Image (cartoon, helix red, strand yellow):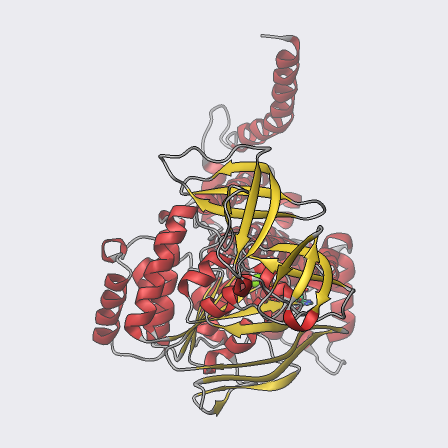
Length: 359
Length: 261
Ligand SMILES: Nc1ncnc2c1ncn2[C@@H]1O[C@H](COP(=O)(O)OP(=O)(O)OP(=O)(O)O)[C@@H](O)[C@H]1O
Ligand SMILES: [Mg+2]
C-alpha cells in the first residue's frame, strides 16, 4: 500500500473548485513533483497534506493512518516555504532546535541533532547567526534543516528555490535531491519550473486547473505525454496541423506534404488533425540527400537561426506550419543560413499523437 | 543658501520658539521659589511631599497594570485579526479609534452609571474594585495607541507563514504566541507601552471622577493652590513624558529584526 495516499481529494473555496478528483499514491522514499502553471492548485494540494487546508471531500492517509482532518501540529510532516519563514528572533541553531524542543527532546539530544542537521546542510559555522544575516540560499538551507530535524514522515517543499538566483537554484536542487535520497524521506516538491521537476523527480504530477493531468516518470512525461496540455507544458512542442488521410495507418497531409505517425490518428479521414514534434527529434539535411526508408521527410525553408551555446535552435517554415528544432553546436561547421531550403526528417515513432482538442 | 532653505529655517525656528519659550518660562519660574536667587526649592518641596510620592506611585502602578492588560488584550486580538479575520480589520480599527473621539468624561459617566453601587456589578462600591475599573478605563483610553503600534509591528512580519511554520513543527498556540509572535513585535509593544505610560501618568478626568488618588488630580490640586510647585510639576511631567518618547525611539530602533522577504 502507498505510504502517502491522497484519494479523490476535492477543494472548494466558496463556489470555486480549485482541486478536482485528485488521486495520488506516493511510495515510501519517493520524490514526487507537482508541476503546473500558476493557479493550478499545487500549493493548495500541498497545504492539504500539511494540514493548513482541509479538503472539501476525499481522504489523505500517511502510512495507513487517516490524517485528513488532523491539525497541522499533530501531523508529522515537514514543510519548507518559498519565503523561508525562519523565525527572525531566533538564531540558526534555535530555529533548527524549535521543533525538537516542542517534541520535548533532552537538551543533549537537541544539541547533537542540531549539529548533525547543520552539518548536513553545510552550515555548521553559521549556527549563531540570525536569519537576516544570511543569504537567501543559506536561509533556505536552514529552513530545510529545521524541517528535517524533526524526522518528518513526509517532507513538503513549496517552490523552495524560486526566490533564488539561477546558479544557486541548480546547485541547491542537486543538494536537496541527494539529501532526500540519503535520508530516504518521502517528498513532495512543488514547482512551476519544468527543468527542476524533470531533473529531480522520481515521478511528476503535471497539474492543470486543479486536476492531475498525468502522473509519470520524467521520461514518460516528456516522451509520452498523454494530453496536449502535458506535451505543451513540459518542454517545447511543435504542432503540425493538417488533414488526416488514412487515420488507421497514421497517414496525414501537412502543407501539401505527406507524413506518417506510428500511432493511429484520432480523426476521421479528410478531417482536420494535428500532431506534434519535440525540437530534438528532427534532423535537417540537404534536400538532395535521401533519408532512411520509413522516416518522414518534409521540405521547408529556414526562417530563423538562434545560437544558444551547446545547441542551435532553428525554425523551419513549410507553409502554414513552422517547427523549431535543435541541433548540436558543431564548432567545425557554421550553422545553416537563413533562407536556405532544407529537408527535415523525423521517425514515425517520434510523431506525438495527442488527445485533448486542437492547440 | 537659497530662498526656500531660508524659509524652512525660519519656520523651524519659529516652531521651536513657540514650543520652547513657554517651557523655558515655566522652568525659570519654577526656580524662583527662594526670593532673589534661583534654587530647586520648589522641586525639593514637590519631591518631599508624601502626597506626590503616593500619587505618583499609584499612577505608575496603574500605568503598568494598564500596559499588562492592554498587551494581553491587544496582541492576541490583532494577531487573530491579521491571521484569520482580515476582513474585520477596518471594523476593529474603527473601534480602537473610538476612545479618541468620545471624550473621557462621557466614558467615565457611562462607567459610573453602569457600575454604581446599586448596579448588578457594583465596582465603584469598593476602592480595590474602583482601581480595577480605572485600569480598564485606562486600557480603553490607551487602546488607539497600543493597537496601532502592535498592528504595525505585526504587519512588518509575515504572521501567517510564521504561524504555519511553527504549527508545522508541532507548536500549539501558546508557543506560537509567546515564542514566535511576541518576540517579533517586542519593539512595537514597547512603543505602545511607553505611549500608554505617557497617557496614564497624567490622566485627570477618569481618576478624578472615580475619585482615585492618582497623579493627575494631585497635579490639578497643587495647581489650584500653590504658586511655584505647579511649574516644577509641569516640568517633571514633561521630562517623564519625553523620557518615554526617548525610550520609544531607543527601543524602536534597537536591535532591528528583519523579517524574511
Ligand atoms: N484562500 C483562498 N481563497 C480563495 N481562493 C483561493 C485561496 N487560496 C487559493 N485560491 C485559489 O485557488 C487556486 C489555486 O491556488 P494555488 O495557490 O494552489 O495555485 P498554485 O498552483 O500554487 O499557483 P502558483 O504557482 O502561482 O503558486 C487559485 O485560483 C487561487 O486563486
Ligand atoms: Mg503556489
